[in-house]
Length: 144
Image (cartoon, rainbow, N blue to C red; front, side):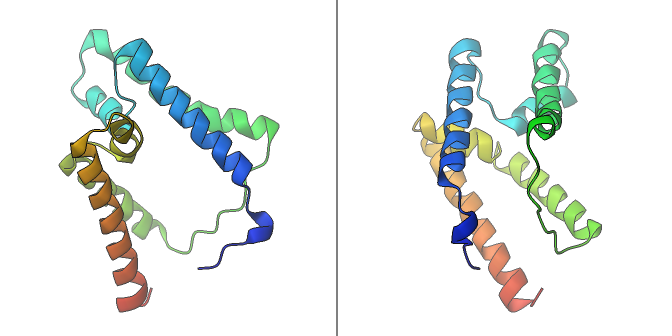
């Protein structure tokens, strides 16, 4: 893998990280809830009427915001070198992993680490190790 230093944009990446951090901090301070997407979505699968409104609003925001972005900027080209079957399988495996790990990377990696949660530290290390191992097996051992 090579980094395209001519296209490297550290300031926009820093701004995005700051916005995610501020959003997660505001969410926990104002609502007392962790901004873990899998937990928010999972809460809709076993709905509680008083709880559903904010969950739906949060998820609608995740869906609508990229469309709003496209009104003001352009999307970068993202090459996907696999088929729909692989993407569906990957999505299912991520879903299973978030269930087994009691949360996703946004819940553990962003919010949990910020709260100095030992459980989130272990989960994040395991997420990263599983990702590294998967890429190694797929790219180097299986040759895809």
